[in-house]
View 1 (spheres, rainbow, N blue to C red):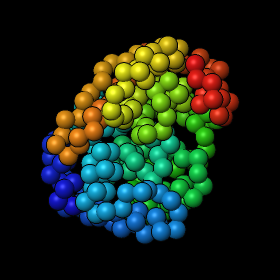
View 2: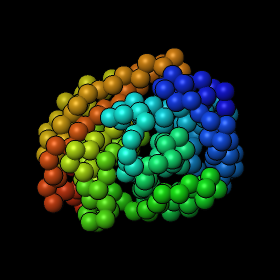
View 3: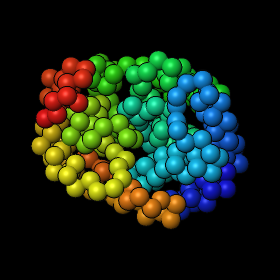
View 4: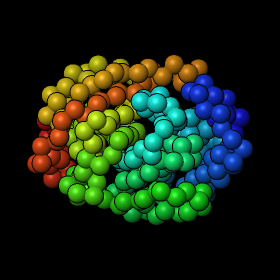
Length: 238
């Protein structure tokens, strides 16, 4: 895990031997399960360290503080194989983490890996964001909402901001030229109670594809009718 260790140091994280062991085990389980269900197209040892693990940890740069002094509640919307949520939980053991995933087989893997890595304060919820966001147990309950490659910003805002508590923030991982996405999403971000705080460029040498974090602060409550029914936010973006 040398690539991960050196990259993590650049974002202010000195990974412990125990944490590196967990990432090692995560890699083995990910590639083993990937032979049975489609979790990732990236399976090379060093490639996973950068593309999945280090990329997930860059989300910390969007936190109010890299080392939170309180138990943050975080939800990873559309987490897939656990990115960025599980790497965040490995390095920040105090956080409360909810992993939201609609696909049953991926949810099964998430339950397996959380158990295998002995991660407590991790809840796996199988369901669609459009429905789960109307559940009082999850609606506007989280300090930080994270999402990686789930949808364009105008769709993501409707799917993810309803989970965010007022005063919290949505951190969306993006790459490339996102100027059009930003323009198309400004209206829906406002409707959902959000306000773009900043677009933070990821300048690590390990990434050369223009990665950034779009940070949206939650400044007011999301109207109760949002998100709309499953599939509608994608088919008919606001």
